[in-house]
Image (cartoon, chains in turn brown, red):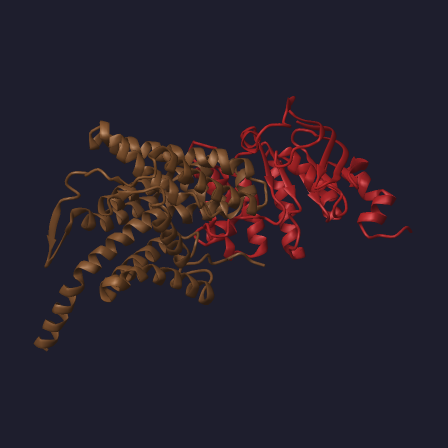
Length: 305
Length: 235
């Protein structure tokens, strides 16, 4: 028995760093994934520009922290990111409200490339070093593993934000309006709900979480490039599909599962094969789509026929 | 109270409403009857601001409603119970009632009690998800939800559609009761017989035009109406 426990502890210690990294990556994906899933829930739109807004948040932090102390740059970047999300919705999605769904999707792809190319143009395309946010980038020991504080904070911060968000959706008036709009635009309007305000609010919450996600993500992976949003954006999207797109708890659970699996695979495979961990993520997407197209927590329909 | 003049609405390339003029006096029940596709729903949806008319005017106590947003119209005291009930299936009965009062900021407890007194069944089921209610209960909820905005004018689009005869009887009784309590009613129905029985005044709509009008009783006795909408042949 003792030997068994001893063995277990050894294995646990061996995999602990990968597990920590996985939980942390999962939290970061979750913060991005919520933006995808909420927008989908209300507009039935996959907001392809979401990952690029995350990238812009990274660059804004690089440039702003050059002239501002980090504790001012942090809230300023958050506000600017939210503003960008709001403006993208107003300029590129709102005019297409009654257009076929394909048009708004194409518009989202357009915004995605616009943001990437604008970033190439403005930054010269060279990778930038993300600034050091004090405290969270310091080292800390967790049991036998050594890691950055941000790795430890991420899952807790993520879960706290998700709980706050869930309470907002369940108990506040705007939350109730969001649930109504996600079910039925027209009836919501008949209740006196301003659809456009609710949709704007959805983008504001989504981009706020993406901004928080960017602080955590880039404190870990400190290089910012114009295409840096693509991979975490795509993985967060897979997480949202995995969890059942439209469902917030689904997106969070999906993100943690993907983050942990990806890092364990990287660790076990090691060396040259580590790059294949991304292949795992997308193989997972294919398997889910084939086996359970609605995902883990996919929308259940209680509508009577 | 509500005065529609020469309303024209184009809908998906066709003229759904060609020329509709009607009057809903304060405190009355007015009904609009007609076959499927005659333009009844489109007329109500124009009043609620869900569709934009191509011409004409919709005046509510003298102010023009065309061009206003739905929330502004709801704020003025007009509400529409949509066709097919359209309750929010994933919300509880109580949440559905609360969202009906979305624009109000005052205390709702009295109004919730009022709706429960009209529909005791809703009180029993206040914790249940609306999607699990029966068709009749969903219709009660849709009406109760609309009443939560404290409307002066309630418009109903086919409230009896797809319900059992006994339930339909109950719904029409409730419409009368709501009207007795001071809410003006504009009702559209395919169930012309029941609708005309409770209505003070009625209009017949055919392919986008008003072709007949009169008190409920007059229309019930009218030969043409009897033939076309009440399924009764000439004697």
